[in-house]
Image (cartoon, rainbow, N blue to C red; front, side):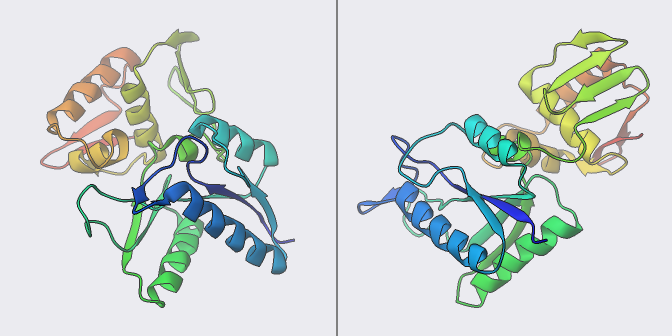
Length: 234
């Protein structure tokens, strides 16, 4: 049986997305999403859409719609722009986390577009994006020591007591868990938690790591990797 695919045309309604000389991202990605959906249906895939008309749903609502379909894959279409002409070009696939299946899909999309003359900018992990973070994944809860992290509800418990984390503290913890036992540089953590356009310095990572160690008793779990960054050892 072919997998089911949830297609999300970005933006919509009052949220036009990027605009250039009268063209609106919301319209371009809707036409593209519907056309891709029809091609997938012709090949036997079950296709769901987060929208098929010019309507707006928040990223959380899009994730809810996707979760209710129980689709196997979630793909969101966007077209970025910049105030400066000719700043952005090419195709880039943003994923929650890289793995064999995800990379195969993302690389396949990028390579096909590359064959028609679009520059291939590769794959980048962006777990901070709401529509990626809040769509269902196989592993929703993880427990170790006296901690339980429910990634579906974004709640953390220590010894049965709920621990209040700031949004960035939680996002950092989730990235460390998802990439457990791997060394992550401060720059990588910045791009994954604070997003690529963060203009501060990497010391904010150190501050948030210390807060996680203190609040969750992770001093012996979150290791400092000299001249690199941090690793959560589980």
